[in-house]
Length: 413
Image (cartoon, rainbow, N blue to C red):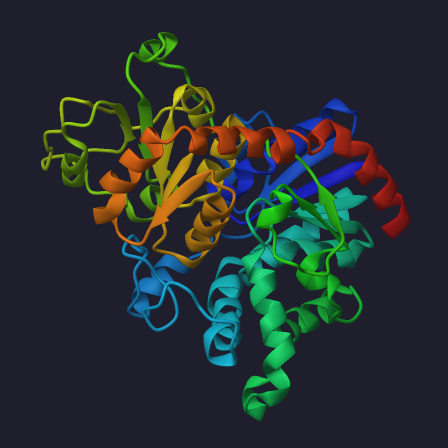
């Protein structure tokens, strides 16, 4: 098969696609990864063939011009609330805004056109797209290819869409139009992809790495797949070769905000809250040049360390609920403590608490007490390992999913 992976220029989203891309390559299929030019180096560093198309999106610049900021470290939601209720005022209007501003912003016209042009040249049998890259299904439709979404976090966008579709008949008339249709419909007409249909929102099927009990109850065709972590080009540091002599705790803010805003969401000064704890704290945070701060004696500050190598040695991980960290911790069987200041982190935190594999706090100030509770109670570690063994490792590997994709592609082309 000829397989085209499509993603906008967001590194962590692309990382979730790499193991499946390599599984298809290893099975003998021809694989390319198309994205905006900014992602080219990340694609080639992963050993895959990059296809730069269109222009880089200017979403962050547009956000700043509109009075917003890429720095969402203080949390974000609807009207200041982290959780948007399943109401029209909560999720219905938020979904419209999310599509109209964010989705259209990252899928700019040049990107869509470039992806379609390459698809017409390459003639893929299958297009695999990450959930925000709606240029993917447009290109697939334009050339008659099968297409699938790859989801690596709970499907909050589709959950919001379902709320929108369920409640729109009772909304003001000028707000009822599905925001996807007036955007994607004309693109399909322009490129010869037929009329708008729901597969443009959810794919003909969804490759889903999310544990079953953390998924939203959505009516989509799911193909389960194990999440295999990829942390980018990395080396294992020498200090990680020796086992820890005290409980090792990883604190990470992920890389998305650092890449977008130039700093981490966890202030280095706040590491003082962990001073005096009998732990080895590995904080993957970056000092601000000229504003360096001292850290507690129990803390090792590192700009970056591959989590797939670090987390198996940890007794706990503290983070903000990002998909890469969450999935890597699930696969390592490590208890998680989340700062749930965003709607996606809150959902993950609630799931972890429900199965006993972690806790969440609303603000950073509650972290020390929650961490002490987790480290003192061995049931958290047992539950995290049980979740790993019963749900994460029980899912088929990317290599095992390849024959399923081959059959589905033949059925949907």
